[in-house]
Amino acid sequence: MDNKLKLDLLRTMLEIRKAELQLAILYKHGEVPCAAHLYEGEEAIAAGVCANLNDKDCITSTHRGHGHCIAKGMDVKKMIAEVCARKTGCCSGKGGTMHMFAPEKGVMGTIGIVGGGMPIATGIGLALKMQKTDNVAVSFFGEGASNNGTFHESLNLASLWKLPVIYVCENNGFATSVSAARSTSVKDISIRALGYNMPGVTVDGNKVDEVYAAAKEAVERARAGEGPTLIECKTYRLRGHFEGDDCLYRTKEETEIAKQLRNPETYWKNCLIIEGVLTEEEYQQMEAEVDAKIAEAVEFALNSPKPEGEDAMTLYHTPLF
Amino acid sequence: MAAKVFTMPRLGQTMEEGSVVEWLVEEGGEITEGEAMVTIQSDKANLEVEAEQDGYLAKILVTEDDGDVEVGTPIAIITDEEGEDFDEDELLAEFE
Ligand SMILES: Cc1ncc(C[n+]2csc(CCOP(=O)(O)OP(=O)(O)O)c2C)c(N)n1
Image (cartoon, rainbow over all chains, first blue to last red; front, side, top):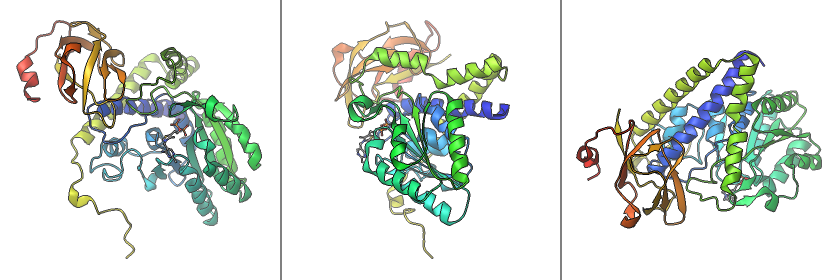
């Protein structure tokens, strides 16, 4: 990893976290008309994986998708505007948080149907292979989604047909209010790869360097025509399942400890300072720049008009002629 | 230096009104961005609501005795500085 990439990873993670914290406030102010599932604490996964991708590589994302969008290059202004249902959003404010797309950047949807992104990414992988490109598709999904039938169907076909797909399981310990221990037959999701005859690895999803390295290997395999990989990233969902979740299914102490010990920005910032790639002053500068960028995006969203009734039937289909 | 109105937050898709259960910071006390400032009862749950900035809880407008108020109703005034002057009528005018 060169120094520029190391710093870019930190900046991307900061952008994701700061955007999420602002969206939490916008939600409380009534600017987000839909449930908001925030990604705070999981940002190393999106950043580490997407740093291996170019604009022609595609991702499918989830109900917890803001971080994937930012990491894959969606304009953060358009992202925040979409979540706030503004006309200037990436889908004209009619999709909202769980229907965000930026095909020019390879963002093929923040899909609210749990497990829904895996077959789509598999299909994209088939298309990319048939078109003889060396591009890849990545599907992000939770450990809860890995218990869905679509996981089995997708991994089986992708392995059989050696499709260029990377399945990235974000194991944050919970599916809504149900802990992984109560819903999932295995401790490590990656072991399930064995059943599909593909490589499976588990990494610490709070360490962006580990995520990056695992994704790099998987992306290289996929580009070389060697087929799919399952990557499990262990992480922790610092916020509730959605904003307004009282989290009665876990203790406050547990969450506080996770907040202290498993902060991906602090980890990576410290690594870079120890390595001499970053100084504390440079970090402060980066943080201020990110704050300004997110503040500008929030202002842009709040100053943008909402869709009108007459917009209801437009933009749903690509015109055929 | 600036003063801001803190309104009854929306804490869920179906929440239209809520009540103050407890202020976790005294009137005039210091608040820290991201730290719990007030417990609110929504239609579904009791939730701790975090301060949105560093500053001071200059004035409490709604207490546990007031019962339910609509989402968006001013419940407190926040200032950047301790003991900062503010014009309450002017701040609240836009909420009338
Ligand atoms: C098919 C389907 N079933 C149920 C839901 C309701 N639902 C939304 S998110 C969620 C939990 C998802 O958990 P996980 O896949 O682990 O992702 P996480 O929320 O932890 O990121 C559920 C059950 C849904 N959106 N779609």
